[in-house]
Image (tube, rainbow, N blue to C red; front, side):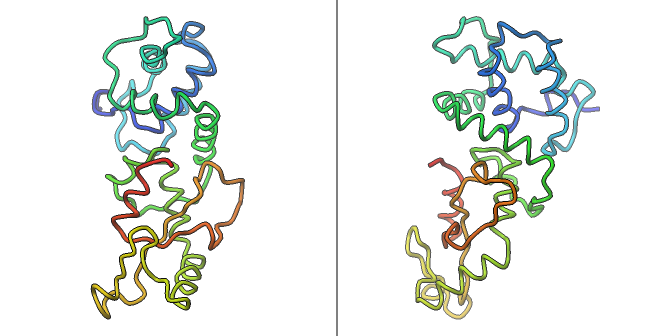
Length: 222
């Protein structure tokens, strides 16, 4: 069995932990609290770790991580557990001032566990950089590669002479000739967390971009 130290906390997990922090400050919680136990079970269901030790995301460890956010909270007690990860601070800075969005993303991650809309062809480096975490990145990529609407977007752009990167203007045909004919990537502009249940992707939800710009668009919000 691998130890817990082999499984550092990921964005998805920290987003869920921070959401719990704002819903129930750790001073009102303990390792045997039903919310802590519930989060522990949920984290064990997330399909984002290849290996789990026997103490993986146990209630005591989950409580400690939730309590860690108190370190960054200007209204906190200042007694949060020390030695937080750098990613904990990044997640705090990204979401602490936008609790409504935090709650929205957290709820969508949970709903994503019951979704079959996942793209299995994942670039691990890219999904690590995605602000909403791995679960929503995989759902995001699934929508970006929905062949029918993607082909429609490309065809409309081609017919109007606009099959180039909408960010930097890169034209694959001009640079690569025949090899670049019809090639472009599609970026899904609407955050997956804002989608309603069963909402379909539309052409206007997609932007045509080159690979470099696409990668950069996945790294930041907005």
